[in-house]
Image (cartoon, rainbow, N blue to C red; front, top):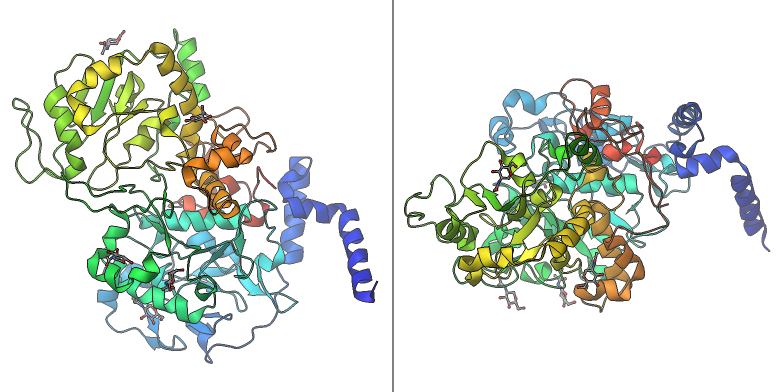
Length: 599
Ligand SMILES: *[C@@H]1O[C@H](CO)[C@@H](O)[C@H](O)[C@H]1NC(C)=O
Ligand SMILES: *[C@@H]1O[C@H](CO)[C@@H](O)[C@H](O)[C@H]1NC(C)=O
Ligand SMILES: *[C@@H]1O[C@H](CO)[C@@H](O)[C@H](O)[C@H]1NC(C)=O
Ligand SMILES: *[C@@H]1O[C@H](CO)[C@@H](O)[C@H](O)[C@H]1NC(C)=O
Ligand SMILES: *[C@@H]1O[C@H](CO)[C@@H](O)[C@H](O)[C@H]1NC(C)=O
């Protein structure tokens, strides 16, 4: 035994014996009492936030005055109103630049809310965390460690023992934080990033990474220009792409048409790179659709369809929320789903209502929803037990009192399959060639009804013929399936769930199985991977319940807090982004202390 390994053994013995270190390791939430936990947190924040190695000075001189030095690559990151190699020049054309990010000139320069609250290691100015010297990254979480390696949150970051490791590219802020995260309508890629941090699945070392996440914002006018810039940038700046031609690179895409939003010119130009990146998108069209004339966007076996992030409040009133169930029972029996099929929403597409007497939409509306909403309305606006309308003022009530709810696509992806699942209404899926979220990894036939487009006229017979026992079994399964469709660890619970089977965890499970069984097609994952099979059924037994806060104030799960309370901590205007790491971390200011169901 060399002296080095001897020291290592002694060190390990010491670590194992020291109770406070063991506590740190598991996060302070494991402390026996609330009092102990608070002490643990205070101790930890005092002891461990000072361990910063001095800056290596890899950036041009003066960078820190207005900017932040990314010391890994020597890039000086500027706030919106400064520019130049050391961020010392005032940016020209500010009005134009701010408009690109949908901001007024004033909003553009001032202090605001930043991603993960800059982890209390910086101040948010001009769309960027202005980190304390020695820290860098989108949320100031990176610094040099004593061993000369980069570390997250001063080495307090505890990696998860199981699961995959994901490397996140720290792109210049014009691609990431210059967008005001809480203003974005579809900020999923940032919430995913937050959760990677709090889940312990982020790594700074590309050599040990299983996947590489490119956190580009994929909505709006800037997407093509930014995409054209970002691919060559990561391919030439970092060594990771060339390790395996980008085959384990991930992009989260929240635009309506998935990869096709890039347009043909960009797709042609980057065809070779694009064929290697995995697209995580909401749009599951896997073959050309002849009626809509929409091209396929989803590449089976390569891409993964992920659920839309439903951010509207109010879903804690779902009949599947145990509190609601109990309340309904107390008020004269559970809710009766005596209606057959419900749909309310756009029928012809933007800005046109169908003619109620003929049931038809005007010309030019054939492609919308692959023609499905139009056809269902045409045939069934008067069918008994069906409610198919462009609008209703009793939306949640209607979803709660019908057995089946139509879940068509829209102008690209649709979100109804997620929305109605959360409300316990069995989704009726119509849209040929369209895969649903996490399909085929999860078998949707277990908890939904799929109808080919050509059978739309026959819907009443098809739905009325589903035996009551089948309906009951599917409804029961929906309680689990709905958990996979909602990002509860980011947004708070709505069904009494604690987030351990939520959409984030489901995606990470799929990525884990893909890595373990690279040659198995996704529809076979449940066959080859016992853990995944149990996960899909929400039946894993090696996990601990975590204290996830719940949405709403009045309908709380016994012993859980309302997420509103944690938002109030941060004052007026705080959004869910104020809580670093997602709502799961609501009770701690430091995301290394977030609870975890899986160590
Ligand atoms: C974003 O910022 C980088 C670094 O400052 C710059 O080189 C690039 O041109 C910018 N890209 C776009 C699309 O604005
Ligand atoms: C990309 O290349 C593949 C063949 O490698 C081809 O089938 C496909 O049409 C190309 N896509 C575009 C958009 O050019
Ligand atoms: C994509 O992958 C293929 C096959 O592994 C490889 O030949 C090609 O060079 C890759 N494209 C890029 C841009 O790395
Ligand atoms: C369902 O039952 C309620 C009350 O029992 C009634 O008001 C409603 O009209 C019924 N709906 C259908 C579609 O039969
Ligand atoms: C769903 O269906 C598949 C077969 O299609 C089956 O293997 C699986 O166990 C089912 N899951 C549930 C939750 O019933």
